Image 1 (cartoon, rainbow, N blue to C red):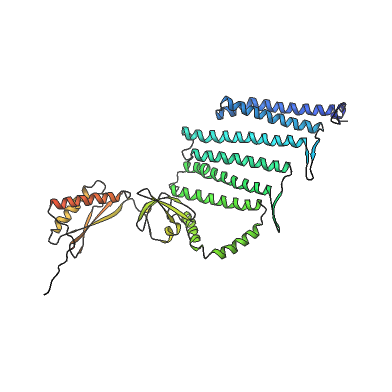
Image 2: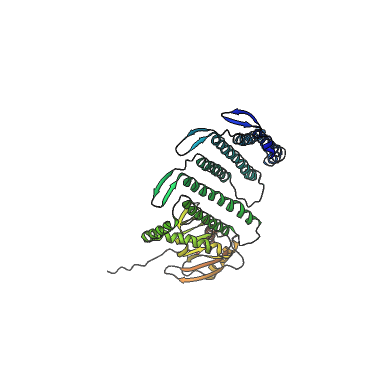
Length: 443
């Protein structure tokens, strides 16, 4: 005879059920265990948590009340099951609504509420504090908007998990759509949403925290801004593609049929979207090849600007006038593009000027050389060079070659040199001719 059977004595009857002494003992044991756990959490875990999160007195009281309510619901559920008081409230055709169902639903709601509070407080303190007080690794490129967005996603994710548990508890997983072998239920929609939101959070953690921390600790010179951007984009694409496939599978769709339908669809629309696919594959090629990276200064056709974003289909190039131009990725791959960021820090530039016939060419050469050397942004080594390019129709065409470092302001440097050349020519009576034509009239 076991210990419980020795105390299996009848005490009284409640709701048609006999209440035995052993039931009361089990309920008391559960209460003692939960009280010991409460004592341990209150005097060990909660003080550490309060100190690490720097919570206010009001937040501490809310967290304490929520934890006490959770333990009370756990004890109440155990006691009702032990005392066999789980009577039926209402019976449906598909579900027997019992008293323990209400208690378990309250438990799910209370656990979700506590998890939301812990998640919000942890994320808020960990990242808002670092943003406001500039703590932690400098590689954490975080903004308040990004942190607040992640908090909202974490809250929605916990609510969806709670909704999925309540759906199973109340047997409300109805069929929404059914076609041949495909059945979409309410739980499938919730699972798909959980997968997509979870992928968004995981992608944010990997790119903005894990990889950003690695970039901050890395001493490799190869991990510049463009490389980091390319790695982050590729990781994000990989996570989102997997999440999309898992979401489709959670909905109950047959991925084999999806792949077959996708192949047929691609064949059908391939010709119509040829340029779009070209841009997409060009964007992937840019991320792998890194011939053009975020932060590079590029010149294409008549536009010069800095690459601020490389997307899957298009890229954004911001010019000197702060105007952003959206460029198809295929243009950056197939067209002639000058990437000034890949050129040596010293670059040669030139400006042309013409003088009238009969001008002392040695004097012109001397003046152009002195003007170039006098400019503070023109390098002394290599020295500027003067070249007589051609005997033009109306002028002797000279070209001034000079070396400079600052590509961004090169147009201003050229303008300064032209002003100085015009001034020097006037001082030395050197004229810049305009085109002339001699017309002979015959009677």
